[in-house]
Length: 123
Image 1 (tube, rainbow, N blue to C red):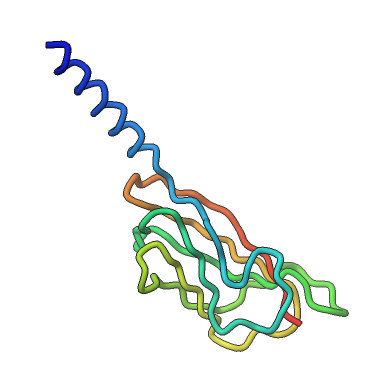
Image 2: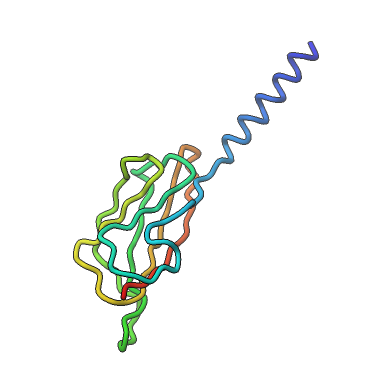
């Protein structure tokens, strides 16, 4: 009887831990704060498999040298990568020199949306 109770508690704790597993951003390409050439794609790598139908991202230009402006949305295609833990953002035209922010929303099997952003600069 004691073994059954111990097993039930262990299973309950495991299920609780799995239910709390939210996707976490592990890395991005370009990396957070990077300063380099315009990327043809931006990749976000998460800790969990993504539900692509509920996940997404927006690419926003936040500054341009010599020109003050409000954040400007950039046209981009968002898709899942070959790895189910990866989100790929593909700008529809080359990114001009400036500062950018990717605002992302990731949903995994626990269905709780997690949001965040990644910033980078294009020379």
